[in-house]
Length: 153
Image (tube, rainbow, N blue to C red; front, top):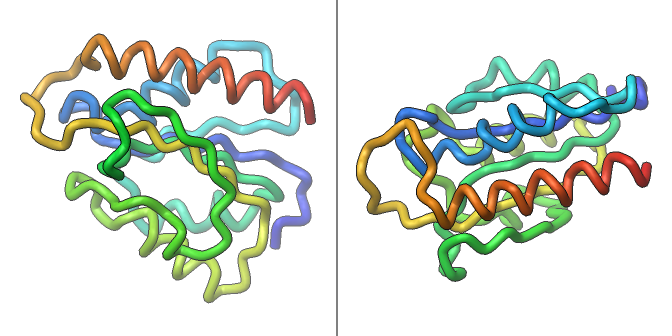
């Protein structure tokens, strides 16, 4: 596994749930830019075990997801978690949580570099297909940081 040298940029979230869909909004914005040939962007939606194959094919994974982690709303946090317990609390709109998916991935021998961009949201928000103003600004920050990271490698 993970012998392709490919970087997978994976955005998670439910765009029908407003800010909870920020990961998908970010990955859609990233893929509009000119990216190295070794980069693949994927709208992972609300997750699911169908994401295991793209994860297994990547040497490096950049995950973007909303988090209810206690930070101020709109905080963009970049971490390099090593175990599923290192991930912030998942949001209930996902079919399965990021932690659950990665537990299976690691059990099956997955070992790429994983970078998580977590964007703190208010989980008590109205249903909307649009991002709130504060989360839209945070998404722009995340896009810029991800593009810089992809350009540097």
